[in-house]
Image (cartoon, helix red, strand yellow):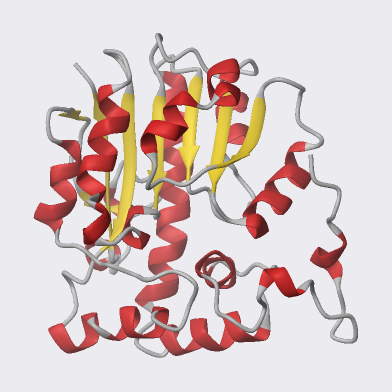
Length: 278
């Protein structure tokens, strides 16, 4: 477990480590800023504000995605799923996967995977107080699903012979078409047994004009990861062969909402769904 957590509370007079590249906008830190977090640097805030200038639905969509994560995890835990493989976790904030799942089932096990050292430091600090053996944070790259499935630490925590909830929240839009994200998801799902579930959310430009839809990705070109927004039919393909839980593939705000409907719910720029492997 990393013990280098001092950078999280550094002042402007004490710059962060160079390996964190604070001068380069980072998607995880930008997302943290959208959510109202403090784990971001000036370059992240400047890039995020540029994206937010395109419209208020950017922040609304980020908050809706986070709320979808919490509702989906809770529902899966209530269905009896007690193993969660959460890939591309992002910087932790209130209501993380293990916190929600373990409210329902204290023995639920969660493997967090991310390829980002920033996320790893934060996640390991958060999990230091978690019950030993119930959650772990590992460095892994979604673009190498075979390595994830073979990782001994993943297999030590999770029994891949029993149903698993595969969580891919707001991560696949950072996988280029050239890396074939649909094949990545298929490899992961194929390795899981019947009764496993896929919970997924993905950014879209379906509710914007072509010009506006191109603005967000243009900002991310200067960031450490590129953004590829996809249409609803492209997101639906991630669930090929799975049984979609009601209400199907909808905007993140419309998936089993736990609050009164809002005017913007049908325009939140995040598609979301949960599917079951038969």
